[in-house]
Amino acid sequence: MSTMTFPLPFQKFLWKLLDLVKSLVNMGSISHSDIYLLSRDAVETKRLNTQHRFLVAISGNNIIHPSIPNNINSIADLGTGTGVWLEDVSKVLPNKSADLHGFDISSAQYPPDHQIRRPGQKSIPLSVHDVLRPFPKEHHSRYDLVHIRLLTAGLKKRRLRDWPNGYVQWEEVDHTAFCTDAVPEAAVVTQLRQSVINAMLTLGLWPFAPKRVHEEISAGGFCDIVHETYTTTGKEHLRGVAQKWVDGVMRALVPPSMVVTGEAKSEAGAREMVEGLVAEFNEHCDHARAMVNFGVVVGRKAD
Image (cartoon, rainbow, N blue to C red; front, side, top):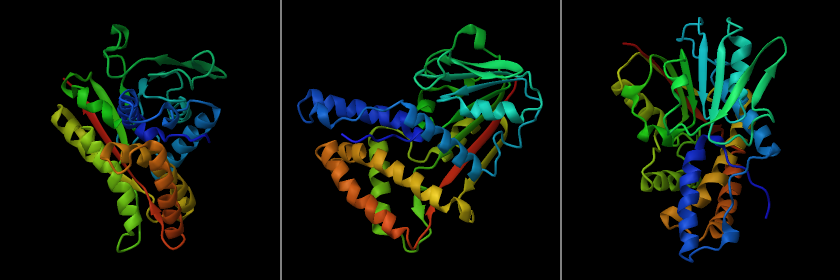
């Protein structure tokens, strides 16, 4: 079976999709050979780092949102993946001795010693932790800024009223934003996107992530809230990158989504369908621009 990598923005969604697919396997509906498990290899690590730089480029190179003061002394990065966001943050923070710490449910993409080494500066530790579970007491009320990127499924189990004091910067790609600038919209784009939206609604997840994050933070006792949407619109230098990224999202998410919605009986069958649809999408992009919108919500929690 050929190697396929899954975009990080939807890891939590994919885990839930894969759990559902696995349950179908146990009932005899799908064979084990049809299931692709999320990879965490060197190729995926490279892709995640490339994705990070793509999203930073969309935001105008704002790694930390400009509404957050620059006198930050400690930062936690949840769902840190390879730790690339923290590594870049360490280069732009005025306080070079700031306490930085990354957390992820898996260490498979961490450096061998679970830390990012920086010559002449203290290393950045990377810990294994499920962000849906309570953190050890040594991390309580410790951080000035908590950064979250592309973890839409986590918030529904997170009580933001219990959030510690400090800032949160939460970044999400809106699942409805995978489109082109063509008017009217091409039917293939609508079909591919709607499969993902319908599957997420079926699984009780959020297909409209940036809006929902803003609503939850607004209701969670935060102040100084900022909600900003970055877009590839008008950024011609990102045209090819955006198309390639959306292509990857569709290949990763639509097949398992079709199994959930009943559009396909197996993930293998869905992949075959999606290959044709994605080819049609890419042909459409010969005359249209793929668009990606990226929502950032910032809030401050204080007594």
